[in-house]
Length: 114
Image 1 (tube, rainbow, N blue to C red):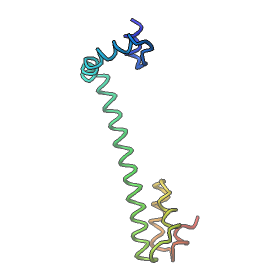
Image 2 (cartoon, helix red, strand yellow):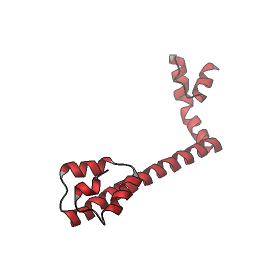
Image 3 (cartoon, helix red, strand yellow):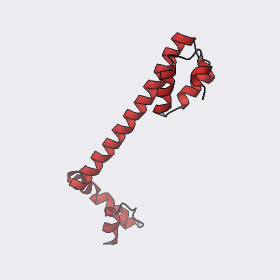
Image 4 (cartoon, rainbow, N blue to C red):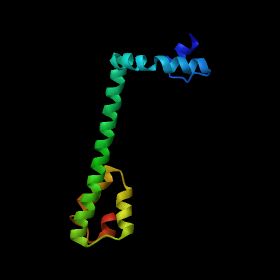
């Protein structure tokens, strides 16, 4: 009974017999769990969180690339230090502020000034 409970709690069995038991029931347990409403809700939540994180990362990378591309057209090729600084920022509000400043800044230093 302890081994069964530990499987459901996600704990690793401590005995050889327990591990053998888990290996025996795991295929069936996986199948049953996949059909479980709770399991499916957890998977959907994890997928939604992963999707949101991926979209947020995509917005950051896109904004960084846009600032570098448009800044290069306006100010010339950025130094490696400037490009590293832009790529190091993951705050979309900061990136948007720099994007807005592209219209009025007279160079990379002015664009990135605090």
